[in-house]
Amino acid sequence: MTLIRTAAIAAAGSSLVLAGIALAPMASAESSDTAIVNCQGKAQVKPKQIVLSCADANLFVYKITWSKWDANGATGKGTLVWNTCLPKTCVDGIVQKYKVSVKLGRVASAPNISVFSGMTLTFPGNAPAGAETATYTIDNPIA
Image (cartoon, rainbow, N blue to C red):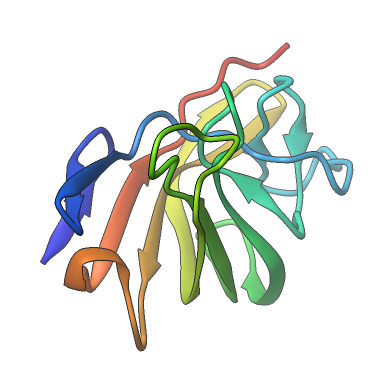
């Protein structure tokens, strides 16, 4: 099963909506590096954390270690953390964690900057609702 950005995952009688993607600040981008754009609109290179929901940060990948990062793509591994917001609210929500492989691609370029505009997570083991992959579009505006 493949998940696309804004697709819903049915899990345990409820659903998780995978909304917009954003990235947590970690490292500053250098002009020659392909970067990703975080929730604050800053270009980042090799972040250790990527927030997938800017509004509430209830879905993010952290502890990312990058094995490749170049002008065409990036690959790494990390842990997806998902606050299910169940049984009633996100404050009381059950937090679930999944090991993931991370792949960044779909390079978009403008004068003086190139950014990754796509991300795919692959679940090598246990995954939400039996998903094998989840695909996101990274479309945060640059500040």
